[in-house]
Amino acid sequence: MGFVLIAMILVGYSIWMSPSEEELAQVKKQQDSIALVNSARIKESEIKLKDTLANQRSEYEAINPLDTVSNDSLKNQLILSQHGEFSSAVEGTNEYSIIENSKLKLKILNKGARIVEAELKDYKTYDSLPLILLTEKTSKFSLNFFVGNKAINTSNYYFTVVEKQNDNVSFQLKTLSGKTLNFNYSLKPDDFMVDFSISSNGFDQLIPSNVHDLSLNWYVDLQKVEKSLDNERNASTIFYKYPEEEASSLDFKSSEKLNLEYKTEWVAFKHQFFTSAIIANTNFEKSGSDIEFIYDENDKSKIASANANLSIPFDHKSKEEFGMKFYFGPNLFPVLKSYDLGLEKMIPLGWGIFGWVNRYAVINVFNWLDNFNLNYGIIILLLTILLKLVLLPFTYKSYLSSAKMKLLKPDIEALNKRMEKEDALKKQQAVMELYKRAGVSPFGGCLPMLFQFPILIAMFNFFPASFELRQQSFLWATDLSTYDSIFDLPFNIPFYGDHVSLFTLLMTVSTIIYTRQNLQNQTSPEMEQMKWIWYLMPIIFLGVFNNYSSGLSYYYFLANMITFGQQFLFKQFVDDKKLHLQLEENKKKPVKKSAFQQRLEDAAKKRGFNPNK
Image 1 (cartoon, helix red, strand yellow):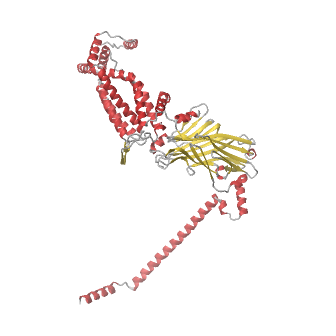
Image 2 (cartoon, helix red, strand yellow):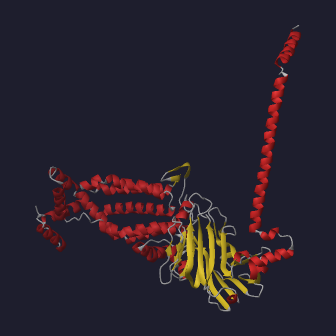
């Protein structure tokens, strides 16, 4: 009975809910409308797709007209109309020639007769891959000129190999009338230089008589090869050198084209530790020469792009040759200096006295220690010890001055308390008078610091630019030329980074301790007010040095630790009681004024000020 009732309910419900004929007609009408609209949309999409494909084909045919011509006769006529004398070199097959020595391996493509790969055999990237300064996809090289109204770009034509050996190769581009253009590459044994020359025969009959130079274009995307992209970018740029002048460089982030104002000896695309350079045997011409460094902060696939348009002279002789060189190699000071071209100026050793300290002292000592085949962490330790020994007399004098100041601190505090209601100028005069009577100079520690300061700044330039430290490990640091990391953070902290550098932490802590010791000996109210600045500086350095060369942080840490050791030894040899008695005896002696002090007092008296009151 229950099943029957359920069946009757279901049947009755379906009959009751069935749509009427009018409703069915309305639904069918809506479905037909939807189908019609969809059909129209599909036809519209097909039309648009056909139009797009037609436009793309038209554009392709405009760029590659030869691919659309099926008749060989018509195709040859089109080639001849577009390329004239160079028509025979338009079509060909890509072939690569390899020349190499113990330092370099170059791959040269017959289309354009250009270097498409330059590998440095002795070096690897940070992730242990072959170190290749340029590739086929990331570089361009061509000679550009006009023949009649036709613009000729040699990268579009297939050259023929006319001579090939392991270390040299010659390519030739032959015109329909038998004129020739040769690109010649040659390597010397154990050298980073590549001899390169462009020679022509009969081109005086092709190039217009009013044209006196040809344009050489070289473009390279500088590839990331080191651990830190930011450090690489900060150290990369384009250098150029005019005759009789030092090398200059473009501002890294300017991305502005620079027109070269004079004849130019060479142009170099500089990485942090490597350089690709083109050097003229007899200078590039001024007219039409420009360089450009193209930087995109958001493009993490490369450091930047470098482009150079350089003019080479053309004297309309039947046979002409212009000699050049390429340099693909490391930014090693001795190597670059050995060429006597001023290339070593690309290494940022600092300006003025800071650069002199690096060139004539630090580099020589560093290279001498390097001859003993020691770990570079040990070499930095020995270098630090040697520098500290040289500065030992000045450091001792600085310590002695600080010890005297510390012994006078109770007298200074008593004087300040006694003159609490006096103005600041009178307090300062009284303190200076006390120093004078005790025979203590408040600036006694300044002279040693003046000697140490150039070395500190010189090291700041030396370590990040030191190629020798590249990929050299020490303790937990895998590469002393870049930052060390004991912990990689899952996020980036502004002004600090995404990692924790232990050498930087050790340097910061030791600097804070050193600062605290020095400030304990300072007695002037002005120094008390400025204490927070002295403590703030190491904290700022913590953020700055966290992404810098770990070799630099390690050096500053060692310098602080050796200073602590020196102060401990000085304390054993300096008797504070005897020193205090000496100061007390000095107070009883008449004050001797230097000629300089006397002139200052005379000048003050003329202005109505009596320094003895």
